[in-house]
Amino acid sequence: MPQHDLIIIGAGPGGYTAAIRAAQLGLNVACIEQEPALGGTCLRIGCIPSKALLESSELFSEANHTFPRHGIILPEVKLDLATMLRRKEQVVNTLTKGVDSLFKKNKITRYLGHARINGTGQIVVESSKEKTDLQAKHILIATGSKSSPLPGVELDGDRIGTSTEALSYPEVPKHLVVIGAGYIGLELGSVWRRLGAKVTVLEFLNRILPGMDDEIAAEAKKILEKQGLEFRLGNKVTKATVQGTQCLVESAGADPITCDRVLLAVGRIPNTDALGLESVNIKLDEKQRIPVDDHFATSAPGIYAIGDVIRGPMLAHKAEEEGVACVERIVTGYGHVNYDAIPGVAYTRPEIASVGKTEEQLKAEKIEYRKGVFPLLANSRARTLGQTEGKIKILADAKTDRILGVHIIASHAGDLINEAAVAINFGASSEDLARSCHAHPTLGEALREAALAVDNRTINF
Image 1 (cartoon, helix red, strand yellow):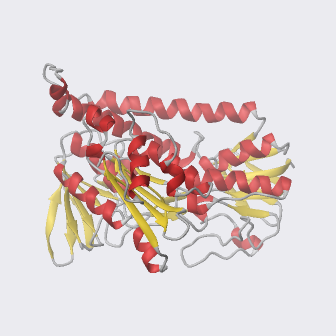
Image 2: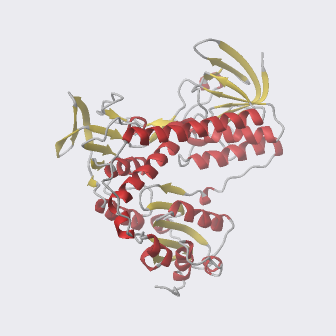
Image 3: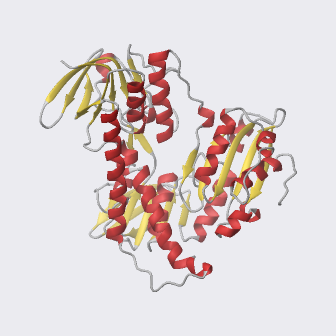
């Protein structure tokens, strides 16, 4: 029976990152993944393919609408959707092969099949060809998440589907209905709107981007509406069915909608079924997550869990940080994740990014704060890019000036937020950020100006 120091179940961002770090620390590591391609949902059918389509569709939109402002006049711009989708697959294939190469480089044993825990230190791997019994000193569960269902919405894997299907529509829908106004719904809704679809977004709440700072979310809604997305908020979808070649979406107290395709994007749920957790007496919480302590240990000795299967935001980079912290804890006795410094990004145009506390959270927690806001229209680099929509908002403790939250809606917000995450991680004040010299002309100067605005001393606005 093969034996390993550490067996990781799942080869997504959390799992493969943990495997590599554990191998670097000298452990004999194995990773079990049921999909032939490594990288998990994020790399295969999530973060990476969606960003590839977002980039391609944005270029298509710019060629049609923005290039003439720069004096670039093209013949008629046409869409070759098949080539666009093929490029997306090429990006995914390159990266999944890259993870495979990293496994080989770090001498990580890979098992293909479904993993089931069969008692302390015991795992059974079942594939279509064989069944393998394994032993390990430590087991790390990193099985990620899957799209959440919605009662009444009948998924058929074609006309009514999840983000997986929305990444590969063979033609641009005439009318796409998106159920859910979170990151996934807005990103994929933006892709197909740019390519010519009518897009209607239905959201149960009276706002978009649940959990995002209210002010930034409201700004995002205005901008996305200008781009052609239609929002119907406070809308409770009760049923979605296929009617021939069309779909019918029904909502409480509203007229039904007939459309070509439906994208269900109401969140994600942990992949915790059929793992054999009962064999080691691990009981799931009310949200089907695996309970862990502050060091990712479950109630069963030698078994740990990270990423989407435990509490916290379902983000690839959060899982990566937890994977590293968990294996470092196993080997060195120390591992830590600062959850106040984990950013989140929606890759719409402009991008929307956030790290730390929202203004609403600070009010609810009765924390006194000061706020600095700087509009992108006053930033010289944004002007030269022709991308002046949005703002940067910094929230700092009223007494200590320590940065508590940063919220951005701007071009390249996903890159800008990293400086803010580092600042929060090191306990920086808004004065620290304001006193740091930023290159000119850059979008980063707007972040510095927002820090200056905390003390009411902006230079360029």
